Length: 513
Image 1 (cartoon, one colour):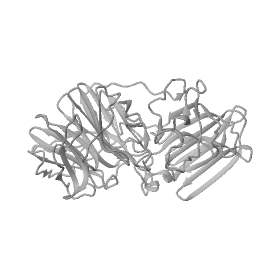
Image 2: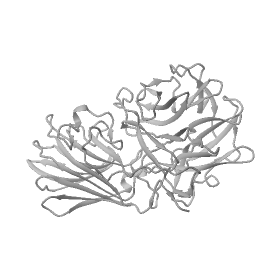
Image 3: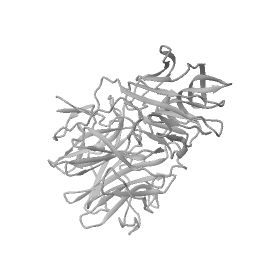
Image 4: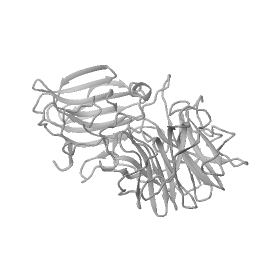
């Protein structure tokens, strides 16, 4: 059997994995989005379903100071003595921290800070009871991977931080994970920056503090300078499965066109780990990630397909939905009108690095159909509600209904850096369907009412919302939003939201070889 990469498509970077019995759990970065650190479950390493988030309260995840691509960086997930531990960095917040839970779906504890600074923290629970904490930082000894021992009950440092490895010379040695395997401590890191020169390197030592011997086969994973649909592979984590073999997850991107640009974000890829005769791991096919690879020797367990339509008839939002930073409690409701999502705008707009009335989900397919039904009768000029294709506050496309000089208008707006183009047209009466067709090279926008045919509104290029143009570490979101220039905002009611993949390529599933 074979499977197709990525196994988790869309903006889910920096994966970390652990195994408990026959179950596998995986977490990824979430940056300025809330709730934070999505957690997934799998039985076969290929088919994954989200089961929750690790950081679900503002106490656990304050994001008021999170700039775009700030917030949560690079979590690590580990299991020890009946507890799950997730350690991460809240950049602009508490810094390095961990939370714990007996159940991976939560609830998780309040954050426990660790004084060792830097980013990309990781944990090793050693056989002798010592707990080693690693992070990427700049210290007295230069840039590299630093380590200390901590008290897992309090987070207190029991030793000073020590530099243990600077990597092989690539830029930004980061993403450390330490493993104890056959008497050796293996230190896995990423180098080259999370860009097209990204790579995975490894070193080992008989002592957790080193000195560390660099693997002679480094980098043990890199798709740099390859003619491939997959690039920027790095930030890996390894896990041993039931038959004793090892597997790795990592991030990667699928750029389009030339020069290459990607807009879905960094995604989760899977590959086998092959050990050399002298005891070094090599990830993938000779250190390369492929689109189609041989599947793990595990029984396939598929999860039910997600429904295309969310009718907003549950008491809570589904796990796909996220907010932009910590939401204002009065900005949204599922109870104001039964079967509708209500958004109340405020003066914060999509152009601000703050918390607008915004509920979105990741774009996970190059081709898909997106739509929502909006009921909105604004009373004040400047009130607006609609759909946005959002990368950050300086790069987004919006399709909305807005009151302009007392008339309800459809607005189509494209914001790319300092450039903004806005077009308006009359808005049909009553409920309006706002529709987006995502294609690999463009987003197509249209509207429809009960009394009209589909009206094409405009389109925008996907590459103008790419990381290479917009910058940052995130990916495109599709979100419902509302804004208001007045304090008393008219509620916008969203009846349903559709997300229908149209990709012909199968993702994240097993295939017959």
